[in-house]
Length: 184
Image (cartoon, rainbow, N blue to C red):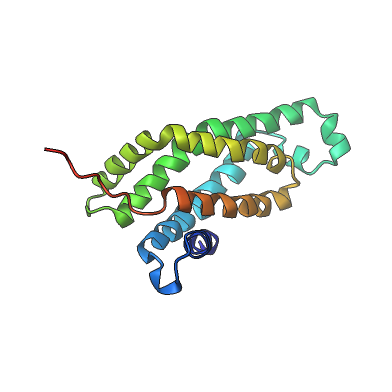
């Protein structure tokens, strides 16, 4: 939560040059809520608890020495599957739809959760190509490293990469999208 909120504030003040009084706090709430609910809860559950079920031997491989890892064909295959699941399933089809729905819940005009999901998924669909491209460019190589780290270092490493990613996502998609006026 502090990480995602901090990344947004850093982006707004450093990249966008806003003063403290100009910070879009509603935008910051998007990142705080998303960070607490999704990143702090669901993502941990999926990448630690569920990955252990789906990718047996994950802990053994992660906690092996680099020399042992390089000789462990099944372990490397399991790590590759984790990378593929993260960049081809988790991030594009879970992370982004939830991000846009949370964003709509805070920045949207409706109080109806159905509208949050509908409007969020519309924005997700419209931004999918660009979002997938930038996500894949960062997370595919990062995941190769992260899913090879010892288990005790995996989540702290992910949080470091995620801070930079969240700052970029804040810059790219954080502000409220203003609808273009319709031409008569």
